[in-house]
Image (cartoon, rainbow, N blue to C red; front, side, top):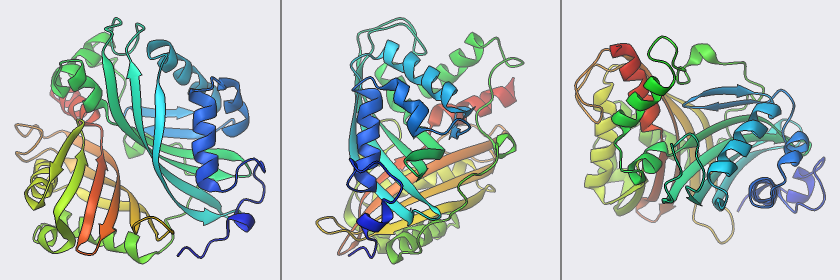
Length: 331
């Protein structure tokens, strides 16, 4: 069981929220589905940095503009909160890792082209730092590949089209890399829980080529939700995904930036990691012929544990942002 007391932890928050997950789920619905876009002035600080693989937005005005554009393109969008894995307290701030299944119909012209009427389903994971009833720092990854695939495109083609629409290589916006970091507001690294540390150790082993850890740390019937809106089952699926990513960037540096583990009543033990892989696209793997591009992969993943190890895993990276970095390098 968690040792946190919700009553004490929610000091400084609106009393209508009974705990941190209720706050995160509640404001998400209020903003997106109840059309309370103006509440972003209250729930997001004026100078919040929001990082995504596509780049950085600083300030709640930019968040409001992006939210309006998305709702104009997908007016019936729903954000179904699958889980909130959290750590922290009211003194140092909370960190919530919020996994969302989003459904929407492409009814308006916008980022994804002319309205197509396509019905989309895709996941997002947002790591949000919260204190005193406000979100003040954020990392967000959307499964862009799932959207692109449902439009009938592959990620490389979509990234190329993005570059062309933005005026070519010289003028195209650059995906997020550490040199764009606006400065951390939240500086925590997690809660030290055993389940988070176990999951961090597992991914560190895999990235260090100790791939045999998959058969010892994953349940043989593990269920994986993977980028591109695809699912996998079993050791072979986990091996195929992680090796495909790592072999594309064999000399890249893997780092775990934030680790949460939790054991809550009525839920299996679970973990949330925010991590990165940064280095040269120097190997064959999921991203084709080696290009030599310097690539930064922003990743967030969740895991649930059963008696035989990781029983379910959700991996979130933006394949389109990886391809964009490769294509910008190639010119």
